[in-house]
Image (tube, rainbow, N blue to C red):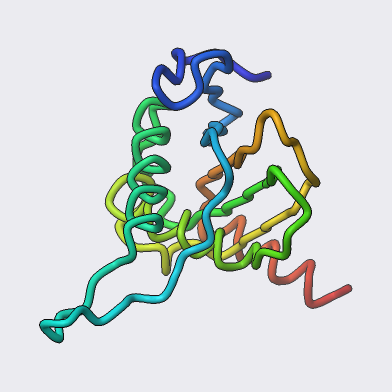
Length: 153
């Protein structure tokens, strides 16, 4: 059963952050932002584009407000459901990459610990574009069971 942990404040004032079992689900308001490639400035230094950096900061803030923290499991399942404000083409895998990278140091030490990813385009919502992020810590045994079941299929 889901338990309300606290309001997501700046992240999503009308939707509570929820702890689901041993994981977390939280909403990142606004249009999901695909992670853009790093750019090289005039000085030759590489930088993260402003839109990408701002979205990654927002994802991390929403995760912290939701109470997301590293678990002892060491492995994670990440699900991202996305509602865009229009039907323009966007790569959901690039949104997932940005979300995963933004949670480094918060949900996990490094996103290489994520062993299952689902990135789902849920459709359009002109009035409330958003990403719903679910993080579930999984044990090594659960992961091995999942692999064994997947190989049997």
